[in-house]
Image 1 (cartoon, rainbow, N blue to C red):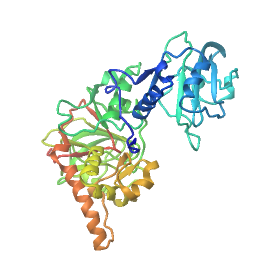
Image 2: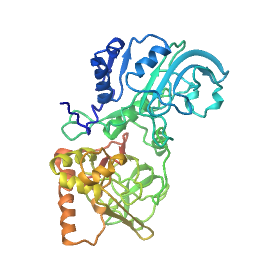
Image 3: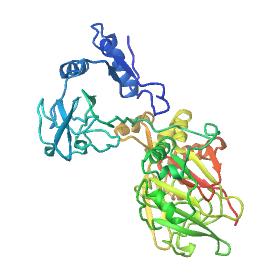
Image 4: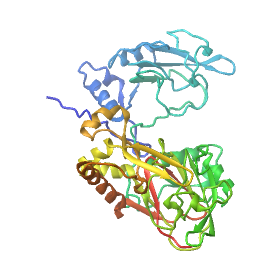
Length: 467
């Protein structure tokens, strides 16, 4: 008998976990008649999502033979197997020769440059409208996103290359990053220097993005203490997106008992929505001030804010959020961060019934103030869409891709006693996990720091403050 766990997606990886080497196998092993090498190759692909076959003879025929050890090649608008030449897009002169192929289902992409897409011949690159037909950098992506069923396995090969660059990049799309808590990040938090982020080579920018992708948050250190420099750093990643609170705020914290402005802070967000700041209330205006009574949000007090995600009442909550303090005279106001994905995985293991409820039962989230009323209904944990039907019945096998929760945004609901008991039986362990000391990072931002969080993953909060 042989058994395989069909829910096992393999080993999640990143640059660090594969630092010692990539999954590979020798050509001769793959071609052995015993099939033991073939099974090893398939196991590598299943485990890591990719593998490299070494020392294949440099011919299209041998390339096709290796591919057909696994599967047939499947045709698309680009053909099924291509032996093509990369073209300099400025001159349309063919400058080096490459081979690539794809299989089951359709679509090519090469590791060097443009796909000419013909079956053993050449066509003008203008026949195809794809960024891969330039020699520009291509961000990591999946192919065939425009097909109802994108390709399954894809095979890439270079026969020769005279020039520079053209290196492959791979990203594990199943890798949600490193799950963390207070203990695992005890030695330090993910951070990067401002000068590195602003380098024209973009290597620092890529490092910053990698930190955000891996941990769900990162801190940029030693930024000049101005709103203009703050915006420039943010716009290295994205534009700021407007909401009822504006798009970027340079505001002053207010003592709620006197409404006197006592210290100045900056924050911004993208996509929509305000940032709860690490010091106190956001006044939300674009470079000006408004009375805090205009906004109905607990962030406009100096009280402790439990860790939460923002914009729970929006159909699509903000993605990245940026927090900054320009100055603070007083005590408290420390940031708190909780890894929502780590909380979800803990509940999946320790309380499957609660996890199933939080994945399948939409909750009502509301924002209300003197001018606005916003409401949405959605689940607290959102799973990968392709797994939804299975999760609805078993509540346990899909990857969590979004956390949406702010206890202060939960609105009243009409329920039977049984429904209420089921809801609170799930909410109680969730709140316990969010508030648990061992799951919470707590630190104070300095005026030169900028904190960015993935609002679909990391929950943020603030301790009570004075000043």
